[in-house]
Length: 115
Image (cartoon, rainbow, N blue to C red):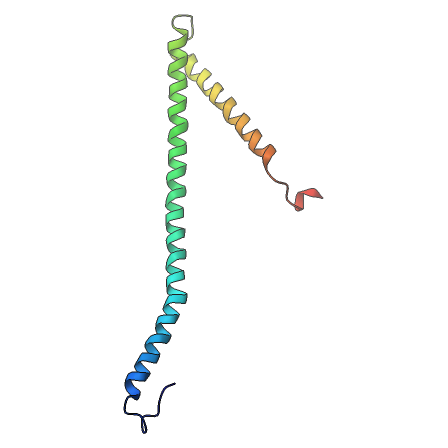
């Protein structure tokens, strides 16, 4: 407990120590948690953006790969580069539609849609 300045010669140091403890406790409980939350938000956002970029670049890479494979695989059978592009888009589109349908099938139902 903080002493009386008239009876305790060490009251200034005790008061400063008490203030330091209170400020330290508030900082530990509030500021550190706020810093952690903001860091999680910032790094999560950066991770999400990078994940979206990687996914888009991956789809582009797969699309170009499928087009090249179709061109190489068919050779001189009448499927030129133009048709291999359309066939590649068709194949990748079908894969993405099937993946989306599977995701929609596995999603949980909310209580609002049950009515």
